[in-house]
Image 1: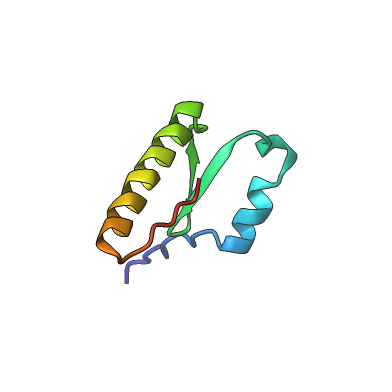
Image 2: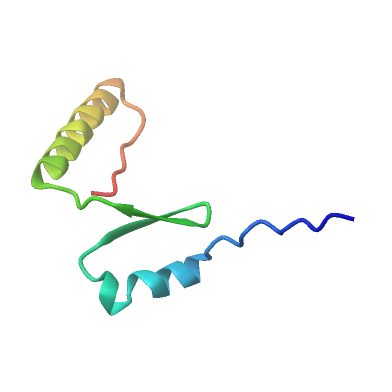
Length: 74
């Protein structure tokens, strides 16, 4: 019989919350993707500007057609 290692357990949302609020992680950007922690580069001012313009144009498109809505996270 061959022993097979169990796949590593992914991080839960509660564990991730605790992880990102540790002092050594202050000022760093993280995502949790299917239990895997990924460090992300911080957004730059241009990112917010581009997101705003995209949302503006999508709203204008939805309003012209009289249907739909736009949501963003920025």
